[in-house]
Length: 333
Image 1: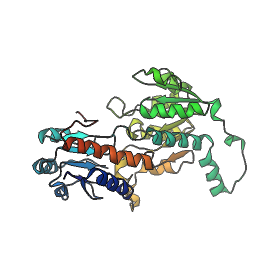
Image 2 (image 1 turned 45 degrees about the horizontal axis):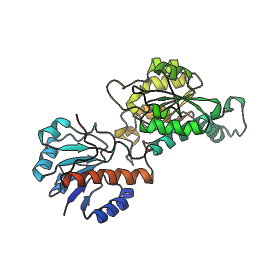
Image 3 (image 1 turned 135 degrees about the horizontal axis):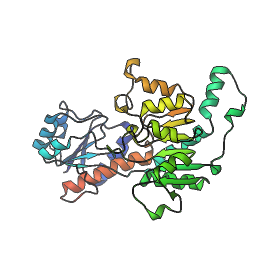
Image 4 (image 1 turned 135 degrees about the vertical axis):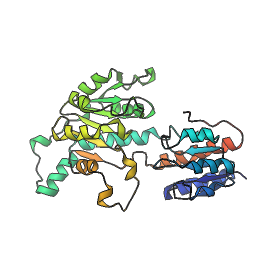
């Protein structure tokens, strides 16, 4: 019988894991702990392992032992693969797979939710109600309706295109910049250049991968190009935005607000609980106090559909490899 070891397993994943294992006659060994040298032995006798890492897998002994156990593949149940040391996977002959598409709609819906929360100034209303006992409708909190506005997307892949479709259906004008042109998305958006998106959009939403070329792609210069009435949404990768520059822009009123499902260096606190005050970065504390900012802990993906797909797509790939086939996605570095 094929055996697979799964690390970082959360309770919500268990029913989908059990269902898949039963249907495919596979033994799946699970732990809620991350993969380390202390528990790598769980993988003994397994053909593959599955991970959802919050931080880097850096210990060489982990890769060495996986190779010695006969493990063929490290299967990531997520999109990102920057936690893996590819020098070591090559050294110890380990394939790496990921799940590049599990539910674009989930992230798209969070993007729209954050944008509408900001647009309707819910955070500011709540702040005044809670702190000032002000239950009035002042002129500075009057909203615009989405069909009057322009949504600008940076990146039009699986998620960006889903965002475009939802906003387009709501009546917004959608403009977008991407390094690749895809004509199938034209019913929902108009392609333009990067600077035009920044200057014309009332809502700027990021949907691009993190590469050295995209790190801090939204910094002081780009924030100054945006409308003072515009909102920035980042449900992609935290390092796409220069956090210090964003804080300064918000304080100076250079943009109207921000929706952030992801922040730079978030892995030290997002996904964790019972943290001390010292464990939480000052940048987060500053942003969290702003009523025109909404932050969620990288939870845009967190739907039943996403969790099911992440588990099943990853495990399907691992079973394919165990049976001598080629998985859907191999990460190459």
